[in-house]
Length: 91
Image (cartoon, rainbow, N blue to C red; front, side, top):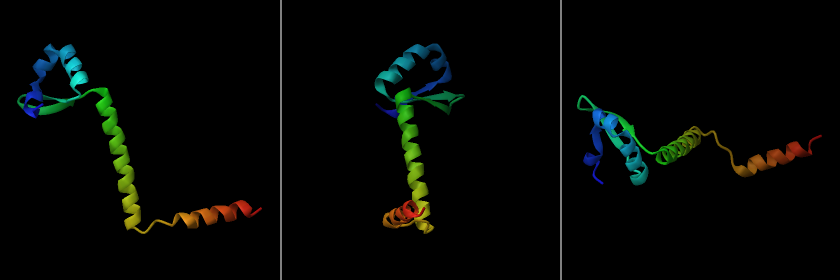
């Protein structure tokens, strides 16, 4: 579906809330809400929102890992395993 058909004024949202919620749930496409001709909000179904949040969290973790690699703050897994084994054997 075209994005232009997914843009509605806030008055439409107020007048057709239950229909919009049903359509968003079924189509899994967001609705852009305008106020005074400007985009002000995006309405989307909860499943899509949760997926987006999970994706963002994973991307943040990956970005953090990349920054640590670039800063040289990494060690080989074998080094960690050896260190853990040494700790376990030390009384």
